[in-house]
Each structure stands twice: as structure tokens, then as C-alpha cells.
Amino acid sequence: MEQNTYITITRQYGSGGKEVSSIVAKKLDLRRYDRKIISLAAAEAGLTSNFDDLLDRSYNSPETCLGNLGDYAYERVPEHNRMYIEQAKVILAIAEKGSAVFLGRCADYILKEKPNTYSFFIYADDEFRTARSKDHYGNRTLKELDGEDKNRKRYYSYYTGQVWGDPKNYDLMINTSHISLETAADIIIKYVDLRQAAKAPVEE
Image (cartoon, rainbow, N blue to C red; front, side, top):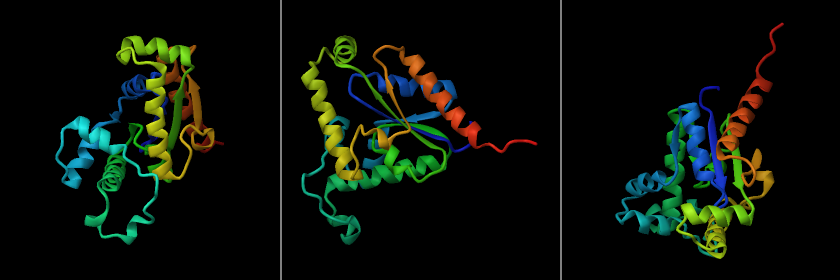
């Protein structure tokens, strides 16, 4: 794998995407970043709250866009916008240090202009998500799982102007309903290897 390779994983709630990201990072011996980005961003923004509160507020995204943030003095930018700005800065700073795996936080959009960025969307059918919820998500109902995804869609749309889960925004969509999460991770790694091999110069 080439230096400065960035793998971003977006996932449907209950699909096992978080675990897939962990497996990918472990297999490639890369750093993996997910919610830790929120804490790092909050520290940069000077926000002090417990993590659960920061997590809840990090998904705030008003229905009405405030326009170009560059038109406002930083101290006048609403807190939810400040959190996104700082998260973007943290993600870009992490990327400068070398290859990494990113879970969520609009990393696919924030890093899309960087070479060697590969974005994946993990999803699953309702039966799989419901069954997985019993062991991993406190037996939450499908309606509750979909509610989490609704928040993610709103957040993603507000800050990127793109549609969360739209295949055009990702290199590959992976359905984990009928394959193991390790297999899903292997597919991601194989895809990156194939893409990078395809652009490598051919020796004569």
C-alpha cells in the first residue's frame, strides 16, 4: 500500500461498519479515527462538556444554512459549525501525518481532494441490522436504528451538500448481510490494492 493512503468508511447504523473499520486498520497496521475526532475538535474549539453531550451536539445541523462560513468572524460562528470546522481541521492534520482509517465524520468529503483517498459505504438489510442490534446496540428497534441514520443523513447533507448513502459519493458499497465483517474488510483492502496496482507504472 502506498504512503499517505486514506480509507474512509461510512456506515448504516447496525451494519457492522464500525467493526469493519477496526479490522481494516488492524490488518493494515494503521491508525483508526472515529469519535476521538470529536474530542480533539472540542479541545481545539475550547469547548468543555462531557463526551456524550459533545457527541450529541456534534450532529447539530440547522435546517437553514447560514451561508458561507467565511463571511463570519470565527467567534460569531454557531457552535455546531465550529465543531464541524474543527473536526475538518483535525482530520486534515491527521492525514498529514500519514495513512489512516477514518470512520464517519464526513471524512470522505473532507479528504476527497487528497490523492489515495478511498471511500466505502457499509450497509445491511433490516433483518441483519435487527439481529445485530440484540447483541451490539442494546436491542434497539429498527425504528431507533433508522432514527440514528436520519441524523447522519441530515448532518452529512448540511455540511457536504451531498446525499448520504448515494453510490456516486463512494468508491464501493458493501452489503454485510451475507458476508462476514472480516470478509468485508478484506474486500476493502483488496479494492485499494487493485486501484493502486492499476496506476503503477508498467515495467518494460
